[in-house]
Structures are given as structure tokens and as C-alpha cells.
Image (tube, rainbow, N blue to C red; front, side, top):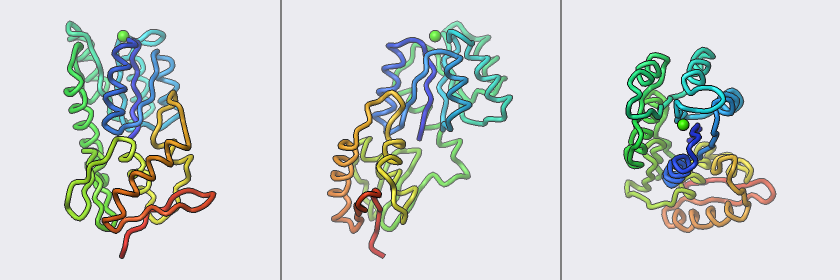
Length: 222
Ligand code: CA
């Protein structure tokens, strides 16, 4: 799940992105309307969190352009407490939900989860493979109907492997899936997370096979 966060308040954007990454989402940050508009036209996102008061192109204009391109990505707008008019305009322009500043991060996380769940209805929100069940919007995994505790990074690795179950997933694809643009990318970090995940999954009959030079393959016993 890839989230674009358009927010020019550095403290706020830092807090939101940390919280969402802990939930296992990949978060890309932009701090102006122009950059948000550019990012939205060049990369696919599962959710946009959009501050309305952005420099170099107002958030409402970003939203108007997005919808006029026919892009249906779910949009959560961040508005000021006294911004009733903006809220109404935003919803009329096709925002899916709004949250008023200041807000608590758990509330934001709940809204994000609800929006993603709603947008995925009709899509496959649960990925199943052998004894594994992965709820992509609730960010939880069970194996043989027992919940499995995984870190955010492990969740992201498993999600990428499950989405391509039966096919080899390259390290580059894993990195792409796990990291936002501005984060340090490390092949070692991938290996460490694959190793941890493998130790948790092997007792359950799920193996992650390393294919030399190519990547990883998720396999379950038939
Ligand atoms: Ca702002």
C-alpha cells in the first residue's frame, strides 16, 4: 500500500509518515502543490493525504486536477478547524473524507484504514496462499487461522511475496514495495527482514526460497 502525503508542515508530515510506516504502508512525501500534482501524474498511489493549505498550488486545485484526469485514488484532506468552506469545496471536488487539524495520529490511522478498506471493496482485500491469510487493508496476517505477529517491514516483504506468489520477486521489487522515495534503501535490510520472516514462517510449512541472482520465491506445502 503506497500513500502520498502532501503536507508542508514538516513536524506534522514527519509525525504522520512515521505513524503510517509503522502500520506497514510505504509513504512518499511532498511539500508543495506542484510536487503533489507531479507525483500523482507519474506514480500510482493507493491513497492521497492532502493538506489544503499548500504552497505553489493550493490543495483544492491539486484535487480538482486529479479528479479531472479521472483519477479515483481515495483522498483524505487535512483542513484547519475553521475551514468549513474548504471542507465543503473539497468534498464537492471529490475528496473522500476529511480530518480537522489538530488530530490524534490513531484517529488518522483509523481514517486511512477505513478509506483503503472502502476503496478495496470489490477488490481482493485478503490474499490467501496455503495456510496464510493476509488482510491487506487491516494489515494483519494469520497462518493456520492463528494470528502471526510481524513487524511493519516483515509485513511489507510478505505482502510483496504474496502478491506474486509462485513467481520470483527481485530485491529491487521488494525495495520498491517497502520504501518511500526519500528513505535509505539497503539490500542488507531486505535480507535481514527476509531472514526474520522465514524463521517465523518455516514452522508453519511456508518457505521463502532464495533464487540466486534473481530474488525470492514464496512456497507453501501443497
Ligand atoms: Ca499547510
